[in-house]
Length: 416
Image (cartoon, rainbow, N blue to C red):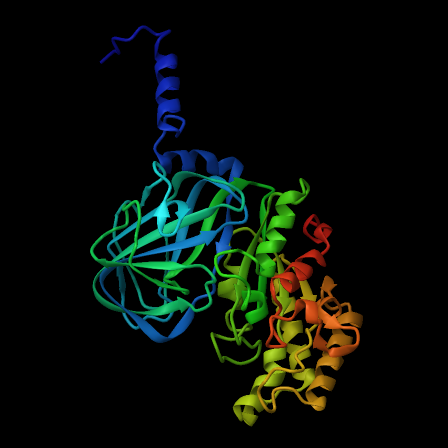
C-alpha cells in the first residue's frame, strides 16, 4: 500500500526519528550489521578468567560490574565466560549502561543485552558467550556498567580475582535495569571477561600479558592506575595512537610455564591474547613468578632454569608472529626485600639478571621495554626504587605504574 505522506516529507520524518532515537533510525543490531563493512570489532577491555578459590554463592541476585574502557565507540557488545564452570551457567538477564559511579548508571543509557535475540542464555561449562551488539555511546577511557541477573542458586567459579574496581551484588531479584544497586560489594569480576566496540578498520588492540604487576596489584581501587590503564591514557592523548586499545590480561601470581594462581601464561595465551578481537600487539612481562615461587612454595619439581624460561618466551613469540601480532617483551623487575623467607636469594637474583641480559641482547622480541631499568633503585639494583615501592618491595605504587607506562615508546603501536 502506498504511503499517504507526500514524498518530500518522508526524508524529513526519517531524519527526525533518527535524531530522537539516537540510532540513525535503525535498531541497534541493524546499525551494527550495516556498519561492519567499514568497521570491525576491537576489544577495549578484558579480564583474564580464573578459577575461583572460593566460588561466590549467588541466590537469584544481580551483579553490577564496572569496567574502564580504553577505546570508545557507539556500538558495543560484551563477552561472558564460564571457563571454570562445571555445568551450564544461566544468565537470566543482562544490561549495559554508562556508569555514574557507586553502583549507579547514567539515566537514559540503560540497554538490554541479548544473545541471538534472546534475553537469556545458558553458557556451557568451559565456554564463553558474546552478546548481540547494542548502540551505546561510550567515551574513550569511559566507565561502563554491565549488570547480570543470575536466577536460582549458583556458585560462581569463574572470576578475575583482582578487579581493582568495585562490584555490586544486589539483594535477591533482577535489578539489571535499576538506577542504583546498593547491596554488598566485592573487588573481583565474575563471569564478565570482555567488552568490545565497533571501530574503524585502523583500530587495533595491544594485549598486556603478565602477573600481579600487570594486573595492577596495590594500585588505588577504582582509580585506573595500573600500568595498562595509564598506557591507554597515553595512547588516547596522541592522535597517532588514539585508535589503539589496551587489554589488561595480568593475573596475580601468574607463571608462564606452570599454573599457580590462574592458568599459566603459555596455556592461556590463545584464549587471552590471540582470541581478542582486533589484537595486533602483545606486551609480555612474565618470569619472576616462574623463578621465585617454587622455592617459596617448596614445589621443587617446578623449579625452572633460565634456559627453560627463555624457551617459553620464544614459544610465545613464535605463536604471536604466526597469528600476525607484534611481540614486545620486558625485562624482569627487582624483587629483593619481599618479606617471605626464600623468595629472594642471590642465586635467584643471578637468574633474573641472566634472563634480563638475554631479553636485552637477543633481539628475539620485536622490541624490549626495560621495566627493570625503570623501577630499580640505582643504589641497590636488586630492589625497587623507594619512590616506586608500594611497601612490599615487589609491587609498584601508583607512581611506579605511571613510570612503567611512561617508559613505553608509543611508536611501537604505529607499526604495521
